[in-house]
Structure formats: structure tokens, C-alpha cells
Image (cartoon, rainbow, N blue to C red; front, top):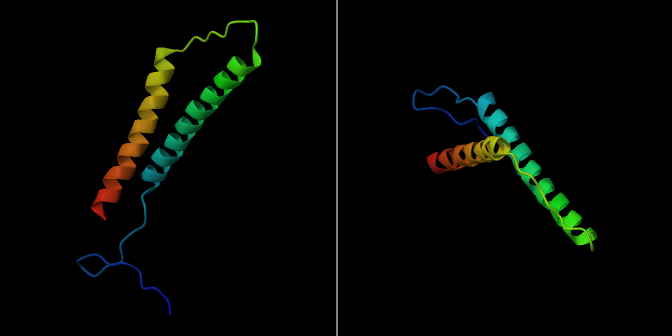
Length: 84
């Protein structure tokens, strides 16, 4: 049995997910990967260095940029999820 496409109230087939939403999702996944790999890299440096103190310098602009992209993607996902 084949599935019929979803239709709007007027009877016309509804479109799929807009490309802008996919771009926001992709940037959010990239931002999450940046945070995850940065944390793993910091953890590896901390565990591998026995006699040298581990320090790091974080750019506030980078935190705002990547955090904003992550928040935007999460917000978009939650808003679209609630509409269903």
C-alpha cells in the first residue's frame, strides 16, 4: 500500500521541509560538533599532561557565534516539533 502525500486544507499537496530549515539544522549540528570536539580535545590535553598545567583561551565571539547557531537550531527544531 502506498502512502498518500499530506494535503493542506485547500486540497493541494503540502511541500516538504524548507531548505532554510535544513541549513539551520546543518549549522546547528556543526556547532554541536565544534563544542563536542573542543571539549574532548581539552579533556585529552588535561589527561595527557602530567607535569604541565593545561590552560586555554576562549574567544567570547566564538562562544556567541557557535552557541547562537546551536540555540537557533534547537529552537527551530522545538518550534517545528510543537506544530505537529
